[in-house]
Length: 394
View: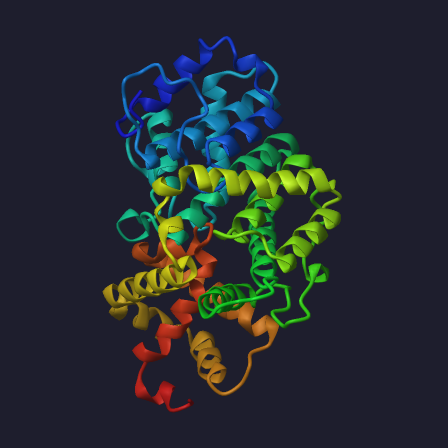
């Protein structure tokens, strides 16, 4: 099976139908296997299914296979008398719900081809965020770490037969906010840690979390997450966020224990989560470029800043035109240079900017999982593009 050529979905499903171990898969086992191969951590060093071919897969192909395998296994584990045709149909419908503006995944629906080929294009779009500028940096890592949201949202969709967009968006917000608090929990922060905290702080200011020093779990709604897999996923991503090449400091340990208490998880599960992250990174550090940098936070901040700068410059004329036509957005952006916007105004700015990004294909990356982290950088560059009358407000 070659996931980089057409027909791989059909081949995958045929092989899976012949797999005698398929009935033994459970959602719990799926999560453990995805964590073992690194998919949960945002970088797949292996695939969870048996590979009988001689093909050596790239990291992107491994991620693609693991995502699709997780979605299929979730379907077969949830639906009685499951079959591959219904599975494909359900996945296309699921991603159609997530693509509210019909701008990213809908590409597969408008191009010719059968349903499995359309699904291939959707999965490819889900993995291929923007490889030329995101490959092997932290934003790529974070974006792929959030891919398991798709799996949880798909299970939610199958069980409740409801639009999964609200669930997926809320879970992403919860994860982002929790990671911010984790980064801010370090007792000693160097200037690069502070840069990263600042970026996260700017990103989550549009939500209900406080970015002040007194910010706590009171600002994050963890109560809705009662499933053990949801809890472990939140815990594991937070363990990834507090990783460093030294021991976890006392501030981070206290934070992780507090998070475990909020999630009603025993201390053994918390310790296991931290140990597994440390073990995975130590074992595969040479294969994960981000963790080879002496100052990963600085690398992330500089890389994302360059990425946004390139995207904006390439789309400068279109972006100026779209922003100029949005009078409310222009007024709020102008006022933001003189005063702090209210929470409602910030949410309005975010919503309108994301709507603009959806109309410009090259900027679609801002509306993907993890894209909210780049939004403050977009706002930072906008005043430099707009007419001088706008900048006079500074």
